[in-house]
Length: 170
Image (tube, rainbow, N blue to C red; front, side, top):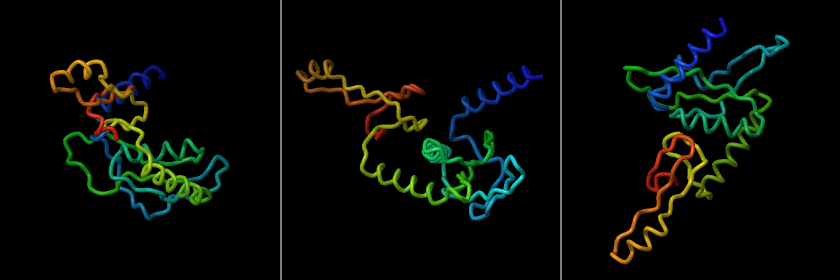
């Protein structure tokens, strides 16, 4: 039944949200250097090549979102909550693209890295979201400045509502 699937999906998502992003692991270990062949809609094999192997779920999702925003189809490993098992080691979160898109994907990712080196746009250290509000405490600091005290600049993630020092978000 479709309603049974919906309830099961809600339960899985709730467990994942409760456990946090760092508690996710790939279902099975994959060799990043291996080429994956998957048939397309017409049954023709499509070769999927690794463009990035990441050490965290957040880095994998950020990479996948950057490519998908440029309309490059990606494949990432299915993830499951780690539970009581110890965290995996190394770059085990693999992002693959179709062989025809490798050059374009590599170009997009290198441009993204170049922009990241020069950009100082804050993003959430917990969930990776770029939709962040900077809290400056201008009026409070004006008043507290009379007493030689001041509140530090802070940021709030508008997705997960994490609030922290601005240095964490940059």
